[in-house]
Image 1 (cartoon, rainbow, N blue to C red):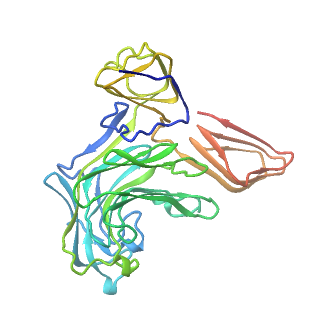
Image 2 (cartoon, rainbow, N blue to C red):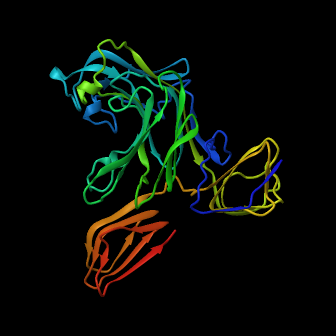
Image 3 (tube, rainbow, N blue to C red):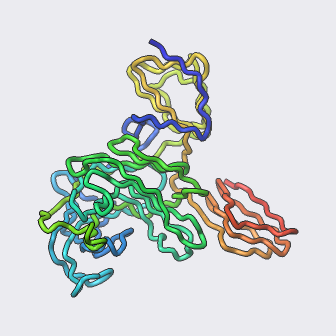
Length: 410
């Protein structure tokens, strides 16, 4: 039986099938690194030592992170938690005589990390008060300029506000550059995470943030300058277990009969980025075996393109994909289509906020520039440029007699 499709997929339309593609299946992705932890690569991973790791607040400083609790065994990264006292002599030492009642293991990989696909194959400890996680954080989150806070949790378990069969997926982002408002989107998905190994994945690009569980999409959010805005590269990729024994003790206390040690076991961490060929226009594909898989500018197909028997094909473009009359996908074949940006992973975001401009000036952003709460007066002539996008938000005002020119200069 044949199935005929007549369809035009335009920029801004996205297809998210339940069994969507991911890098191991999709030839449009390239490997940045794959770590199977035969050894601990100390050029990639730093073992955390101390009471508080990057991105952790005081509620997760119950334990003291030690070198001894992070090691590789049987091809797994072991992040161990023990019930044992440890002397704290620096940082956030919160306990009588600076003695922490637990120790744990945690690793940090330094980027920058930006748009791409990230996944971890791991077995997580399930115990009340435990918070195993895989997340991205950046030291610039310290609100020196009060303008942004970015964090993405690929997976975060917090048994204070979820049960042993839920995992949290969460992103933090700024909503107001004058007064830092650490907001975010939070969701939980069912997963018996303590019973075995699972894939926890994240796809992140300029338009969307998508979470995967066992390589299937479970949640997605828009990602843009106006609403969501997790655009900055992240400095830290972190794997570890937080303990929240003192956060709302009636809800979060670790049971007295909890057995130790408890381990977070990581079998793999993989990082991928899309291959970009975004200036290429494709009109028909004659041979999928020799096709150069990468994100194109546009793809057009008709009955001159045949999907091979038994194949699972992924095609991606930045502008549109057009399926013209006569195009067929026959039984026993799968086709995944996605209209998606393909960004330089090193692209950057600048802010022009809370300023009064009274003289002729040129403001140059990097790839993307967000403008908010800017007053232009005194007949000033202002040129605002960025490499890809200028976003004007609330509070921008140019008085009579001024002149503002906005341009994109790649």
